[in-house]
Amino acid sequence: MIRVSCGTAMELNILNGKLAIAPTTAYFMIGNKCNNKCAFCSQSIESTSRKDKLSRVLWPEFEKKEILNALLNYKKNNIKRICLQVMGSNESLKETIDFIKYIKLNLNIPISVSAKIENEENLKKLFDIGVNKIGIAIDGANKEVYEKVKGDDFEQKIKFIKDMGNKYTDKITTHIIVGLGETHEDIFILYEDLIKNNVTVSLFAFTPVRGTKLEKHEPPSIESYRRVQLMTYLIKKGYTKDKFKFENGYLTYISPIDISIYEEIKMGMPFKISGCKYCNRPYYNERPGGTIYNYSRSLNREECSNAILELNMELKEY
Image 1: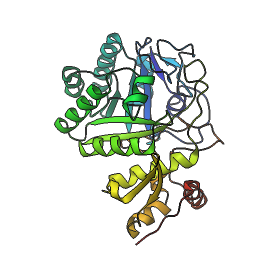
Image 2 (image 1 turned 180 degrees about the vertical axis):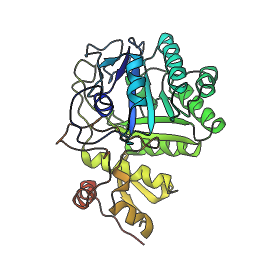
Image 3 (image 1 turned 60 degrees about the vertical axis):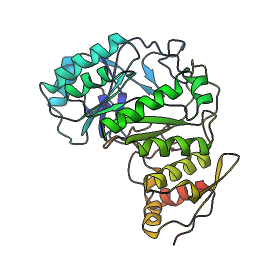
Image 4 (image 1 turned 90 degrees about the vertical axis):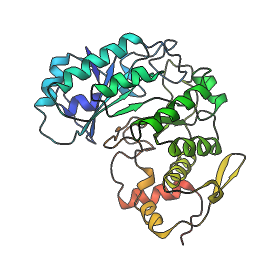
């Protein structure tokens, strides 16, 4: 049995329901047991959360054959990628390899895998069977935060991700969770380092989940998150640290912005989902009708204006 995100299952017509935003990636979760102890995650071995949840999303189970048939019969043309979320166990990785082979025999579609990969041998196994993106999570943006929420191998994990990023260009991804106790300056340092080493970085806003160690930890303010979104967007555009000012680690100033990039900001580009191509993760961090951290679609004019106002800082163009 494979778990399928509710939105994906509805889009594939194997679960009844209406979607406010259609997913552009099909999200599947593989494995029934995770050996990791991530303090924020419902799938942690130490969590008492429901095991059919990841973040705030429900993941009902379906047979492999039913999933394949749904993909083969899919006609809407919204889904352009498959993303596999893999539990932290050897059994889950083996199951993932079998599932990918099963899909690839019948379907030609880009596949991403997010898994606990700790050596190049397992990385190669996935690339060799047709995976084109592999995500190795960082989550915590500095050593202290990482050790608090994940474990004690921060430097080793960063080195491995950067080494693989340089060896397998544009094929390695990771993600950073904003709001775990890091500073904006911490995120800048890590994000810039990863980008320079050919690693694609996704941003998530911390989402408290009942039953986890951090269930009572507050999510980041929308002002803080918007500033991180804009800062990382500008890093990808080549902006260096001298273009930013931080006070006690908090971003307070950005040098005048090139007019062409400023136009992209006014269109809301920095505030959309970041990461793999075609990944839009509808409502992964948000409740419908609540505060939207990552927009899963193009922003309308009012949303663009509001997102810029939420920065609560003066922007200048040149």
